[in-house]
Length: 145
Image (cartoon, rainbow, N blue to C red; front, top):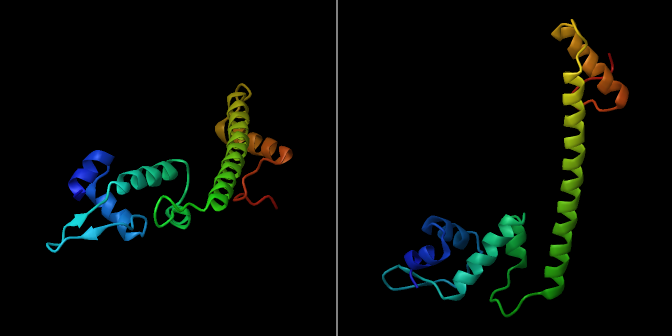
């Protein structure tokens, strides 16, 4: 099929399909004598795998390393290992996000609990002092003073 049909069937722009080809992710592309690309039906499935993998957090480099030359020759153990690693990466990100959320919630609560009559500058010092005492100071703040 030509790139226009593949784009229509996959929902991807022709430029995106050409990009995946240039990145070595779509390999089974043939050129006609007139220079037009001819894609096998397998390319549609391959594009689905690529876009799905990207949505789940795989980089193009990771996808390139996992994709077989043709879909009948998957390296099962490598694929399972990569999927498990990506799950562990996501769990680590979830943990980091939970910590960040808790930090932000504590910061909001601290700011909202400004003592009556305290001006902004004094309140800022109060909030940062609380953060220092609780060890929640961002890395970019010099705590030596």
